[in-house]
Amino acid sequence: MVENTSDSAVQAHILQHLDKNNTIDDTLQLAQQLNITHIELDKSLKSLSAEEYIALQVIEKKLIELTEEGSQYAEKGTPEFQYASGLELNTPTNKAEYDKQIGAELAKIGFSKAMQRKWVQLVPDNKELVNRLAENLEDTERDQLRKYSEFPDLDHHDKKVIDQMKKRKLVNVVTQKHYKVTKGTNFAPVRVKLETDLTADMLRTGAWKDTKFKSFNFNSTGINPEGGHLHPLLKVRSHFREILLEMGFNEMPTNRYVESSFWNFDTLFQPQSHPARDMHDTFFLKKPVLCKEFPAEYGERVKDIHEKGGFGSLGYQYKWDVNEARKNLLRTHTTAISSQMLYALANQKEFKPMKYFSIDRVFRNETLDATHLAEFHQVEGLIADRNIGLSHLISLLKEFYEKIGIKQLKFKPAYNPYTEPSMEVFGYHPQLKKWVEIGNSGVFRPEMLRPMGLPEDVSVIAWGLSLERPTMIYYGINNIKDLFGHKVSLTSTKNNKICYINP
Ligand code: PHE
Image (cartoon, rainbow, N blue to C red; front, side, top):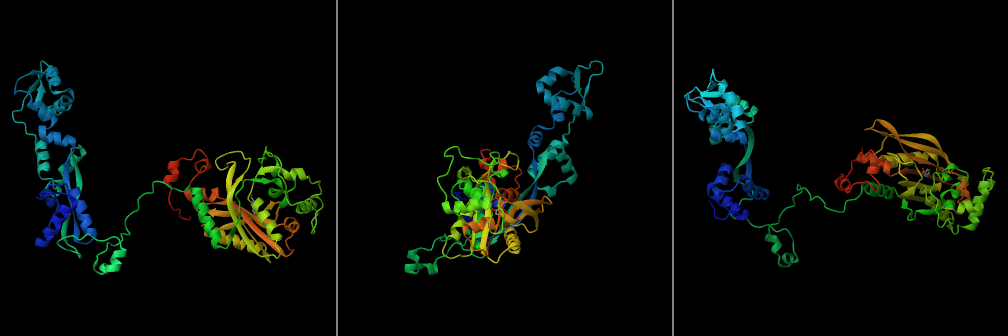
């Protein structure tokens, strides 16, 4: 028995004991000797074994433990015993009164069981009276339960009886883990506190040579971060951003939501009567309604291509209205930025091939449902170079989607005012076992590029997808309202997987 049962005192006791006797046969007994619980002892054992002062060998023991009811029976006897033993032998007693006296609940079970065992009977000519018949009341169950509590080791008792007792919820079988302890590879009679830091002092004095350092525990689990959880969309966004940067794309400055119709639609050869420009699909600004300006000369060329065509195109043959182009809106796609970047590229002295990407928010006047909100995020990328076309686009898409974990792709011809040819991208979803649309792409039209001033032999291939779709797939989210907006619970952000695994 040690006086001080603090962790370090217990550890010192263990080490001294081993120093003298080489082993501790059973830590259960040691806990009893030290007068501490085995759980308390366990802490000291684990700590010593982590530094290999000691080696632990698990001993598992199955023990019978009495339930609360079982303990009561062991103490006072079974209900039938309690019922019968409370009555005088051969002395009819008023049952109602007796039942009340010993308690209705005990009386109910106790009486019927005592009847079965013929310990008591109701007096034949007066059923209000109960009479004890048996002189010797042998309460075998109580005796059995008492034996269990004295010798709880499962191996010492009849299995069948234990099973019956278990069914009656009088006992449980529990597994107790304890140890045999021997000296570990780093055994020493006194524990040396290991250093956790290499200090400048140790280096200066040379003390580091004789210092014992604590090794890293790579198996310990980290503390759950309490704060600073990234929203799933942001996690996927930074993952995609990294992929695109690795692929050599430059990030476009998308840090504004308001654009003019000019950059959002007109420069993209989207006619002013196009349904997407309708109030129903686009949020226009009330204040200021019109943008200040856009490059005037370029504006003229955009007007010409819409009205009359050029570069082999007939245009749309309608009257282009500058005021329609000046209308401010919440950008409906990030292609509005791509257009400005390409215009800037065209206005450099000499053309340089470029790869651009962006991931940012766009707005559409959508009917809201489980998969649509009025705002969402677009991932968009483009390459401007000489001698590139559809085949490059296809291989680019394969590379990108493979990197985000989508390995099977299908392409479907589609229509965009600003690309020709255009392709919708479908990816196979192995969990849903179906093809889902995961992007739109194409080769930008000369009607868009030539008025900007890009050389004739320069092509631009581009694609776009929503950030929400792959995020919902990665995180198994079915309703977009659980991902984005005021209904998202902070707890879900906190409890989401830190990493998602590509499907
Ligand atoms: N802007 C298109 C959209 O909003 C995506 C896209 C980008 C398509 C680039 C073709 C080329 O769906």
